[in-house]
Structure formats: C-alpha cells, structure tokens
View: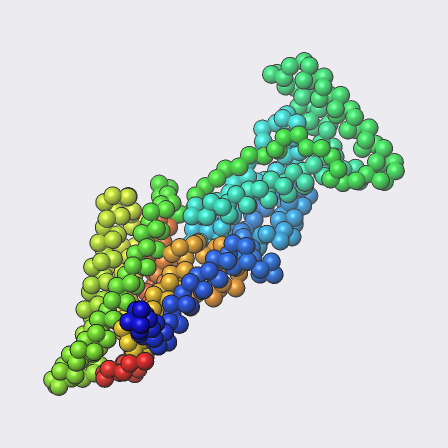
Length: 434
C-alpha cells in the first residue's frame, strides 16, 4: 500500500508541477464553454448582431414607404442606405445578408391583391445563400411589415386614403373565373368595409391597422447572390473544407513547434549551431519546410473535396493558390511562435491546442460568424483564421476575383511576419524546464 501511495503521489506531483501545461488544460474547456454559452443562451444583456440588409424602394408610394420605415425601425434588422448596384455587390461579397427590392406600383397593386382580384406584385430578394437562417428572418419580418402597411392603407379612412375596395370591387365584377357565390360574398364584404370607413370618417375614431388580413398580397422572387455567373450556386462543402482544412493544418503547426522543442531537448540544436549557420537561418529553414508541408496538405485536402464532393474554384485560381501559400507560411511561423512561448513540449502542446481552438472558433470554421454577437464579429477580425476562411469562401463558391484575395493574403503574411519575429526573439536554444 505504501508503494501504491508513493507512485500515485509521484504522478500527481509531476502533473501539477508543470503549471503551464496545467493552465492550458483548464483554459481550453473553459474558453470553449464560455464561447458557445455566449452564442446559445448567454447573458440577456449581450447585444445580438442585427441582420444587415438593404431595401430598394422603386415604388415610393405611401404603402411602400410605410413598409421601408417599419423595416428600418425593426430592432432585428440593420438597413443600410445603398443603391441597387452597391447592395447587390455587398450581398455577393457577404457584407449584407439580403437586398429587398420593392417593385414599382407595389402600393397600387398589393392592396387589391388582398382579395385575390389581381396578379400579386413580386418582391425580389437577392440573398447570401450561405445564411439560410438569416433569409428566413428577413422573409418573416418582411411579411409582417408588408401586411401591416398594406392593410392599414386598404382599410384606413380620411383624406388621401386610397379607395382600395372600389378597385377590388371592379376586379371582382370583371372576373370571368370567380363563382357567383364567391362574388356575392366579396361584394357584401366590400359593402361592410365601406360602411366602416364611412363611420370612421364621421367620428375620426378609426383605428389604423385594426383591419383583418385575407391573403398575402405579394409573392417573392428569391435569387442566390454568388457570382456574376448565373449558374454558380452556394456549395456548403466548399466552406466546410476551408474551415476544417484551416483547423487541421494549424494542428500540423503544433507538431512543428513540438518537434523543435524535442530537438532542443535532445541537444540537436546545439550541434547545428556549431556549424556556420545563423539562428535566423536555422529558424527560417523550419518555416520553409513547414510551409511546404502545409501547402501540400492543404492542396490535397481541397483536391479530395473537388474529386469527391464537387468543390469548385469559381473565383480567381491565382487568388486561391495565393491563399493556400500565405496560410501555409503563416502556419509554419505560428508553430515557431507557439514553441517560443511554450518553452517545453508539454506546455507547448497545451498552449498550441488552446490557441488553435480559439482561432478556429473565432475564425468562423465551426460556427458562421454572422451568429456571433456584434462586438465579436468585429473582434474576430484579429484572428488570421477569419481572413483565411473568408478568403477561401470568396475564391470558391462566392466566385469573386483576385481583388477579394489580396487583403486576406496580405493579412496572413503579416501574421506570419509577426509570428516569425517573435519566435526569433523569444526562442531559447538551451533546454529550460518549468
């Protein structure tokens, strides 16, 4: 029994004496739990991100203006003042979730369509197909505000109120397909509505918006905004392969950092430094070899996606290759950076896993960025993974050109330079435990 106690005590002392490794082991699950808790059921005081859209009003009628004003005032939406061309481009680039276009003569045609007497006007919605949930929100709120605006105008009284029932009455009388029973019922309904409007006009006590609704007075034309090519469609596999590729290539960077520390522990670095090679040359060789390995692995990951799952580079092929190379260099430099901070293989492994999980979570590889709180959507831009995932989305299913790849490439190379400089300054060539 004494021997068992001694062995257990030895293992516990060894494990808890490595404070860096212990800290990383505790920090990772806490950070992940806090992240998902903030997204799904966190503090009620957390400001949720609004759904950014644009509305193009081609009608400019009283009805359409009421609808636009209601959408602007809705707390769930963030309506941005853009023209049609700017809005369409913003949706295609993922900056907006949708652009809603209210057609000309909408106000004149929508109210009579409540009674089925005319063809319904068509509202065009161009949307980002990667965010179907946001599209459902936009359609639901649009239906609510259209019905409120149309019924208020159809049944309101007073100067300037449109005589919608008279127009609907003419449509019913002129209909060749409506049954006689339905015709009589609708005409009786219009008589009742006109009496209510007359009473309201006399008493000035009519309550706008209190009228009943009958049927949706419009239809929706949905258009996926991906690229200028009409046959380009959203591909969920493209985003998944980008996100998972980013995650597991970063894990390769962990192996690179641990390998460096293992070589140092074995005294191999001391032997290499005996040769006429500078410190920067030795670390630089590790970045080059690590970047080549990362680029090959990432290429193979996408190759499998293309062969088996239909992943396609709809945008710039040069931009796509540039992103792979930039991310590969960043990954190799990240491995050295983690090794310089971790000091020991044990602490480095925990630190690297924690850092990688945080970057992947905030980069949108696991959960789409648009579900983040507003402050986190902005804050995630400090993560190189966010730029990588957005860049690969732009080059694959979004079908954007080289202009959409330059900034992510430059940002990734900037992170690579930062990681490399810190690694060169902080890396200890002599083994130091603790």
